Length: 276
Ligand SMILES: [Zn+2]
Image (tube, rainbow, N blue to C red):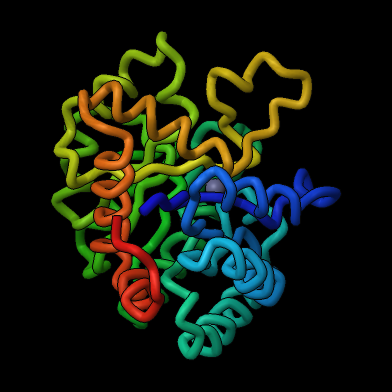
């Protein structure tokens, strides 16, 4: 079982050849992608695209949320839109959580209070509906941990993780797993590789974050667009780092994702898929 736990298939970068991208991912052995929405108004397009991808990758699912990068244009009323979309989506087995949400302290134009407001309100939503969250954590590990600690969030994924070992351990204690992808494929990414090697294997998931974070072998290309078909090769790098087989790596990582995203596990239990 090979799952891409973070893939923005709805991104404009895939506008001209999305069908081919889905096809290539399925051909390369990806069984499913998790498609995190980034704006409240994208509910239907994300849902439809997930169902389309599921025709070739049956384990595909989606989450709904407002990404911190899109908070400058977000209005308070978007939270109502999101809440209605979540209630509606609860009937859809492919809807599995709240995301992508979080805090981005890297981009200088994002107002800290404004993004924190949307983040906290979406954590409220996750708590209310007992849903896991997909977290965007960029130079904001401690602030996000502080926001999570007093809450009863069931867990989720800290995607594209790039913090310290201690910070990773705090996320893991809160029933989160951490996502690794293209960044790990660069030999000089020593800190990320150390995390990928030394963290408990039960706390790691694989992701592409396509079209972003291209792996080393794409970074030199002109377009350097990442896509979900790269996941098997990315998983081979993790297998190397962990000194185990590629299939073992993919299976462990897929099981980790299903453990922290219960509705995804329920979806898969209903599918006639092989479990390896
Ligand atoms: Zn993302």
